Structure formats: structure tokens, C-alpha cells
Length: 149
Image 1: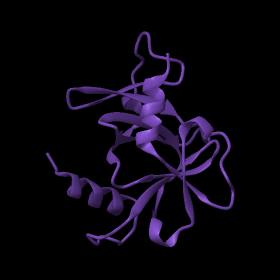
Image 2: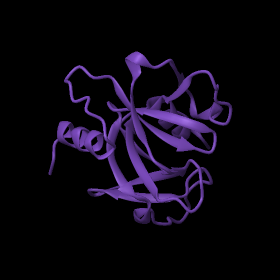
Image 3: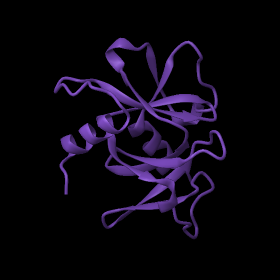
């Protein structure tokens, strides 16, 4: 099994960037129905094909299914996007839990040090600003989802 640094390098190579420095502050930008949303590399765990998403009984309405990561099932949120385009799931870790984001379209990498961005809370996900890149606060998103009744 690859360690975290190898997985991050593989993701960078897969999507065509050459920024492999140890001090990088990059994020994977995924297209969503609300606009482009970034997930910091420090939160990334894995990218999987969306075909791996399986239905799961009693799952709250916010989720579209689950994916396996080792012996763990991670809930997945569908972020919307263009239909008919290949879909993937990016697994991110926040507050000690895994969260999957299913997206459609081509992701890309940005350097957060060179990009105007703001942290967003999943509660306000439908209201993204156009002048700044939305950076998903994975810890806050997991906390909000765990706090639901």
C-alpha cells in the first residue's frame, strides 16, 4: 500500500501538475453544481471511480451512497455537475472521519498560496462567491453532518 505522500504525488501526476515540493499548499479543485470547490491536499485520502458508490440502507438524505476504503465505509455526497461526464469520488478526512464527494468533470490543482480563496462551511454550500475559490473546510463539514439529528 502506498503512503500518503505517494498518493498525493500520484494525484498530482494524474491531473497534470508538476508542483511536487515538500512545502506545497495545493488543493484539488472539483467542478460542482454550485461552482468550483477546492479540497486541500492535506485532507485528501484517495480518488476512486464513482462506480464504486454503493447504496446503503438508512443513509440520511444528504448522502447518495457509500464507498469502501480498506475496511471502512465512507458516506458520499453528490456534488452535482454535468451529466454524461465521467464521475469520480474524492475521499477526504476531517475530524477523524472519511467523507466522499462525488463529482463529474475534470479536476485540476491550484496552489492555495497563489489563489484567492475562502473557507466554506457545507451549510452554505449553495451560496458560493464568484470572486473567490471556495475551499471546503472538511473538518467543519464532517462536524455539521455528524451533528444532524
